[in-house]
Length: 265
Image (cartoon, rainbow, N blue to C red; front, side, top):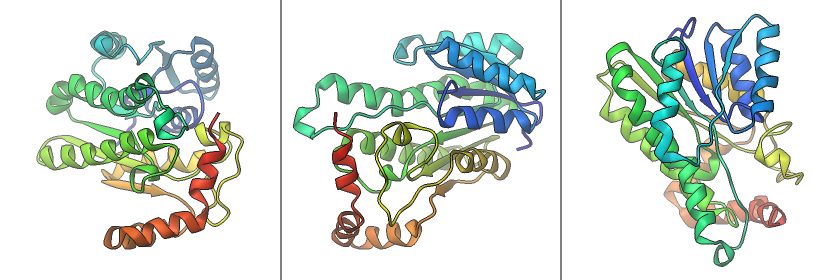
């Protein structure tokens, strides 16, 4: 899909990787409707994009209010017509030993990371089926291989990956494309960076701009899935599917669990 003059609804647009996605899509001609809770954050992104000649509409909204998402969609559509592209970027995580999570902790992670993308897509799909569209969801490599001390997050991202897979198959003859982006550890911005913990040395990090570029590529080429990671993740993930116990050994050898445990607060 050519994104020029297309209207993009981007969640989690006020900070982190969301700001890179917003700037990249705007630079390539898309009109961005950015939503997040932070009014100041959205306005800062708006100023930066408009300084470079792009278009950004700030639409503050609390995604925890999942039963009011129809209002968000109505407000977005009222700006300049139907949304052409949805980028499900907003996400949260809580590190803890599983027995120490509260029910609310688990519920909130599943809600923001999985239920909100599904509900926004359900609301936007009728107009996309008529006029064409694309849905890109930011998942994680944690959805490909479970991560200790961050298990609700892993579950939510695995669900997002499988939901996208199913939607892509269900609507393969339609005008709507579905893509999922699976980043590993990201430097300079985002939730892992905000935790101020060094990543496993053997896995390294990727830049947030790489994720934004992957989103652009996914829309243009209707990519099914893009993994964003500098390390040898694709063969390791493939081997892990064949032998889960071997995958467990590799994860422990790389120190993923130790890094996650350090992030418990």
